[in-house]
Image 1 (cartoon, rainbow, N blue to C red):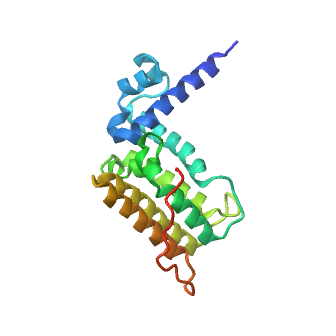
Image 2 (cartoon, rainbow, N blue to C red):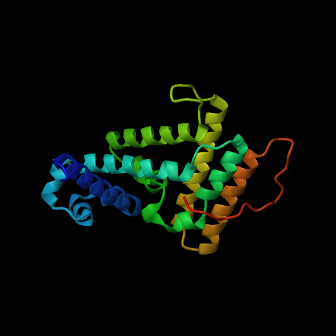
Image 3 (cartoon, one colour):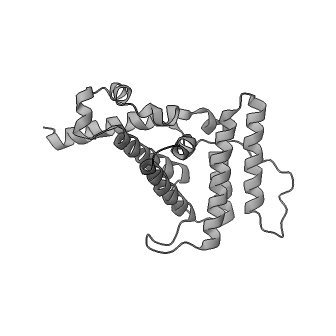
Length: 211
């Protein structure tokens, strides 16, 4: 027999899944209680067994979205150089498949503009999740170890290219222009990841994969 705590956990997961999808496609305005609960297949009253208000839902759904996005994008830990890691992840992020699939896309990009205009509480959550992604990208030896400052700088520049590039590519109507934005950002990552004594030339970074 399923216990009450198991049922409550299952209902919470349904709410967070629905909320995360709404946030990715509609921004913070998508975290309205009624449509999220309808998507979750639960009654409006069930919401208050988990959250006090819409702001709590938005923060929890955002965290939940990144719990899914982050490991799926970065994949399992592997032996690779820092430049190879940036190139691999840049190709996966700055792809047309990622650009076009809002419901399953990176929450950092989907909520960047909204977070800039949000209340301090949501900004704090956004910052915490961004810092987690930067740390995961830098792959420190263990949880408590410091990150190399130069690598962290690279990671910040990389994330700015990824989040900014995918956001601009989604914001324009011309598909050719949109694709060019993705290509230019991938090439910028290639230049950033190439040692000074090597030249990336005009080699196109292929657009494939999905975040």
